[in-house]
Image (cartoon, rainbow, N blue to C red; front, side, top):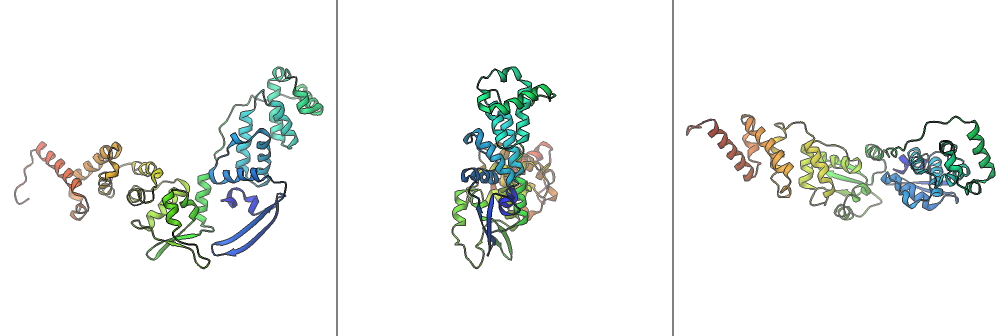
Length: 360
């Protein structure tokens, strides 16, 4: 993820990296990066936090630190982080901080933000100039530059606050999943193996973290895990959810809800999985029986969108297409499902005055 979102650390040329040292290991390449002494460790942690979460805790940064983070992001090739910080700065610019803002933009050699501050002054000249501390904050040379700009410049349209840019975190995690670069574990399903990054799964829940820690890493082979009760296809879908919060098909969602929700305490995924069930445009013959059975599980008690809405849709589809359902499929249903179907059939027969002969 660092290689994708902060590429200047792992590759390319930047004045912030003193040296890189690589060595081959079982899962790929281990890299040690030594940054130059001028790089702030605390600011680097903010960049790492953004790389893995897509968020910057701006509350913990003052104005000067945010400008420094802009420069750090630019040097590391993190254009999105740079844009995020600059948008935050622009949205926070006001009369109380215009002179410190202008001074910092100038001293940190950020011409875009400096021009933005000057434009703000142009639109609010009288109010800005009423601050008697301005000259002492920005100095005489910058004050003269500002005054000259007010005389000569054409005023651009006023700035309107904009949302922070999309962090593209999901896209980058999905890219990491598709590339499978430096995966450090495999899930085994018979003869099929599925590689994955343990840290992504371990972050999903304490139970999954404990499960993954049961196998000690080896220097000779990747640790192997067996996820009981789910297929390889379902596990791959689980990875899509955990890496990138993606969409999966309804039947796979049911399989994951039944076999991973409780044992691995993935309760945060429940609503997302049920959204994938509800996302299906219509109930079909392929989905109606598994979905119908799922609505009767004890863990769904009180969830009306399942026990009433979805169950009713599945039940009506089964009854309306009863002749197409195989007897073997009914054998997989619990007795409460069968009773519900028989009760509805009985009601339909009475409403339509249908009488079955003994031979039927």
